[in-house]
Length: 623
Image (cartoon, rainbow, N blue to C red):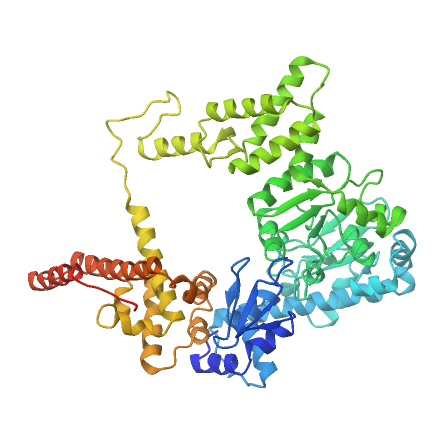
């Protein structure tokens, strides 16, 4: 859907960013800006800044930034259209009716119908739970699981009748045709008629972060199989991109998230006051799940079952969380199996104490590793030490590695110096350099340095042979610095744009030297055109410029970063002033170099060469 720029700008201007964000975050004025705790990551000291002048926000902790539209998109997990509609409603702005393409209109209508039928099904299951035929399910929740009526309502719990076509007939009566019902994941339609996906099960509606029902989970009553059954993936429901309970957990002010294995674990924890509990949906924890959690926290506690399967699940999740930049701990559930059982037997206070005692995830991995070896057998004891040293190599940062080495040596009574020597020897064995870290992957145990050599050799026939360890000197080209140079040019363009946006007076310093056309990187060129035009017209508006890029997730985040420099501090000394002048010259020189490569004739090339020569005599002063 497309809205004219003037409509988007009207909605943005009628929603003051401080007023809107104050509805989500407690803000306190400090100087010209407002500060609060960032809603996109957990922190103790406010680093989330809102500028009424710029109508922009920025977190100095996690780097989140943007305008009022991007804030609503990020916080509510809305699409651009949903955020715009929400803010338009808030400001009393009527959005024009937009024309969809036929395909887009059909997709939007299908999605809306799927949401509606899921809502109807959830209401139907809840209704059945309170009827005589649902007594078995109701007693299961109330008596066996000790859930209150308030909790049942909060999570929309229900019951699917024993009749195997109960829901199908209900939805048909509501006017839904078989061809559509096939898309819902709620029923199976065959020549002989339709039958329900869920029957004789207690039901758990699965909601997205905006509290819309996108799927269901069901637990069978009795001894049927499978014990738990989830909706198949549909246009609404993707198991790897949703977490059960996140619609409530995302607003929790707890410092971490609790990751569980099952629906009832999440529900029991929420009922006990732990509103930060979530669970993956009948699938192993994935990098997509970690990416979702990273938006809300950088700390998690794994509360998986205490049995062997739960331990394996934790061991799979730990490296995924680590790679996502999330610190993980593991909660000891024993003598109970899972959080639900623990809460019912020992209570919320005991669980809180276990949270405080949760085991560091790496130390947990070493604990589990040790169980595989007999410490009475010298050979196995040696293998345990070797495997421990190998795992310590996963830390690329020397200080972090040393801290863990000391902790492991202390807890497992290993001589610290001997373990350090073993780690160093293994590092040399695997060819690790400073900053490299050892990783285990599906191809076996190999470190990043070895893998780099292998990939280069396989791709180009040059570099170090993985078989012989020798270099193919004859075919290896000279080292190229081109990628570094290109990244440096991008950084220069980005930095100069940021400076110009922050300090309007700098335009006078570069007048006649730099124009928007000198920003040859496409994204920065688009921004530069708007920035230079805004300056010329006396209405440079960062929040308005950002709105032009808001439909592209990657672009708007990169553009948002241009508007959040603290330039007055960074140009406060002679060294920084010199850096500014050098950056201007670097951007201009790159622009001329690009133009020379694309010159159409000798006369144009000669003019470019003349301008290149003039750059050597150019002096830029900020005084």
